[in-house]
Image (tube, rainbow, N blue to C red; front, top):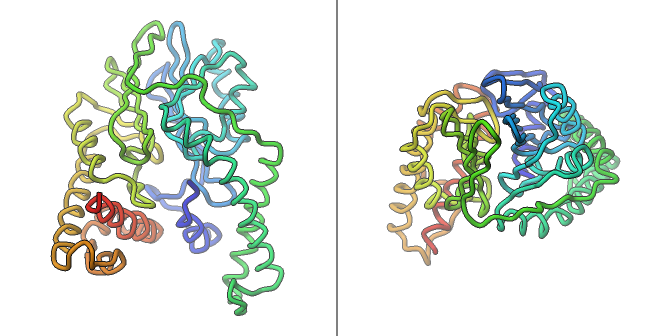
Length: 357
């Protein structure tokens, strides 16, 4: 899913020179070494403003696992060169934690580098990649064509002249999307070739890595990896720092139960789908509290009017999440914009939709 909010953030921040710590944007690639055999790669945001999911490298005595292949082929290739410096072993398993492009679009690069690689995903994830990937690529190209027309004419979609600042931002955005488009000219999706419907264990020699299939949180096919010996949980976008991802609603009712289950696990370190590695449960518990309270607020608002008569946009306007916005945004403006889209709109939408089921 290519989140439209990223474009909004791009207009406001990407070309203004602002760089913040603990912000939703990631201006630079970085590597966190959790041990001699475990590394987490955070990727610089793509030129089109879209985020790239974290990639985790797990080196066992017998097998090597990579979790998520990121968004840009060039970033995946950079990761592969880094992995080859860490170990002479090939990557045996590539795990797709879910179907979104920023976590699996690098799959072809791993297959080129490691022809015998096994790409593992849940059944739902494999189905969604096959259903949506080519359509999303076509839509991306259509959007780029439309953007170029607006830049050329200096007018927005309804024919009104663009403000100078908006036109400048659009030109930068078009250039960024052109850069990504050029990378993807010969791109052909590579789909998972091992499909699972329940949890499995992967013995990589010195430890067993547990693949966990639980109820939907971010997507229908969320897959997490638990390293019990090290008490590390690799979550995909089930957990995202510093603002949870609930664009399009996601699955807050089942999601909060999954997060509560995680909270009861013996985990000391969380590797989120985006953002910094977390070494305690504070953020997890803050997110649980947020979701529970938004569920309660949405239910209370709906009960006033009745589900058949109330409109989503009225519920979104009625609910004040200012305290949570301050807590999660840490005074960073781009985080506030992101919170409005992901939580005040998205999470509320997910709760509203959940009541209708």
